[in-house]
Image 1: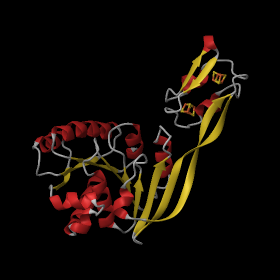
Image 2: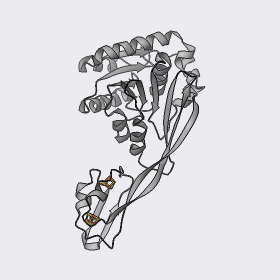
Image 3: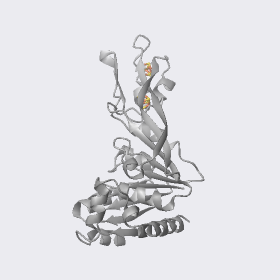
Image 4: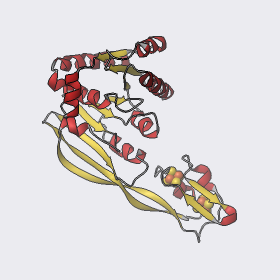
Length: 281
Ligand code: SF4
Ligand code: SF4
């Protein structure tokens, strides 16, 4: 099973939830940090990293002497990452949009497109206190597009395991890639107008992707009741509410997981997981 933890905006407590869920379930868990631009699950889980592999992905280039400027590569690139300017005899690649899918080199009738292997980042793997497997992607600082690295991290998903995927915040391509093919998506939010606005976008995203979703409201005792009202209206299950407590905020700032300062949350997260399993059934 794959459960992705996402949030429409940053700072809602997404990683607090993802790490607490992993630490509560422990058995048969794999934690995959797909927030590859800023992975921070390791701060709370403190894994013993045993393996690090560099991820290389193909970067298309054109041999202009072979190109007839037919435009086929540009037409078939799903990501609008190529522009063929016939009058100027130019082929431009927009690498920040390129997903290294290989289509352009495959379809070019003149074999004018070749690929160079480019370093995208690293995938690190280790164990969390001997309890479960930990995987994180770290995007190379100069890289603009995290999606191919997220795909590479998600290849580590194992069928028989409870794969907990920590997505990046927002609703853009990296989040879509992290949520894609998940069995369930936990959306973490807070009861504020910003929280509601970004939750609405995240719910739309999961609906379009056909991924069942539920909401965890963090700092539930501050703000207003609009998030709850929205969830009821949209029939989105509220899986859990976590109240604001100064101790949680202080522990979070020190990299201490929620379940370590409030061990009663271990059972609460286990019950939440049971509820998710029932919903998926
Ligand atoms: S498909 Fe090949 S020949 Fe056609 S424009 Fe692209 S690079 Fe040039
Ligand atoms: S590799 Fe794929 S995404 Fe990148 S330019 Fe070619 S067709 Fe577009």
